[in-house]
Length: 117
Image (cartoon, rainbow, N blue to C red; front, side, top):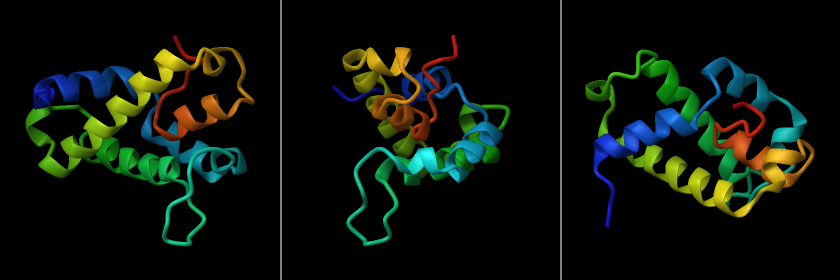
């Protein structure tokens, strides 16, 4: 069953625990490129890195997190972010324990810092 938009927005705002500035700083560093699947376009950018850039746009566009200010493209990407973060947090305890792990770095690309509580 597909989650309704309201649930997706709520879960996105709970799971994405990095600010736009924190995520932007992270994505500028080399560690952000050390994990994840590369896109098929030959750019060398990972799918998670691209996702992080989209998350920054969403956070910057609507810093007050007002539900009616998200468009369908935002919500579609938020849905992917929620699914990715939930799946990887459930499967990979390493991300919570080891900041050098690929899991930790990948989750950060998707806006979730597993070291934050």
